[in-house]
Image 1 (cartoon, one colour):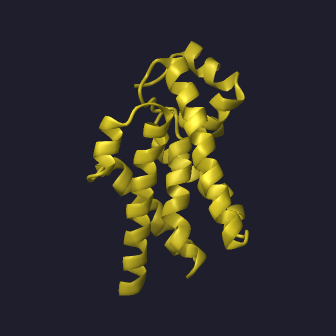
Image 2 (tube, rainbow, N blue to C red; image 1 turned 45 degrees about the vertical axis):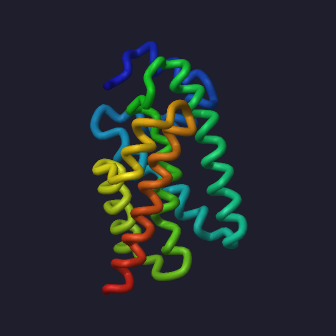
Length: 163
């Protein structure tokens, strides 16, 4: 469901809206989740340079901030999981790429992590689908993508082991 002009303005007028819509990437007219996941790669390149404990703190803080921002957007837009809200894709994508902190940083593996996350986020295997349907508000918006990110991270690790 695409947003009308007043809903887009509401998101862009508030700092939590900017965060929730991935700094505007979620307002893409085509595949906003994929656009958000793609834009999430840029901060990942900086995030991955931090020491591991700081990355863990940053991921936890980004998840917590996402719960607040996504909850604000859900309440403001009156939509349970607005397509324009893509901060959950940012965090899910970062979780999916976390195995690359310990192994290859090649662009090929980043692309694999991106594709794997999009597959798990779209296909929504259990418990991703359960979280998507049963958990409401900002926490629900964030949780299903975090689980999809964990699935993608595990698949990325398995793929790296195989190759």
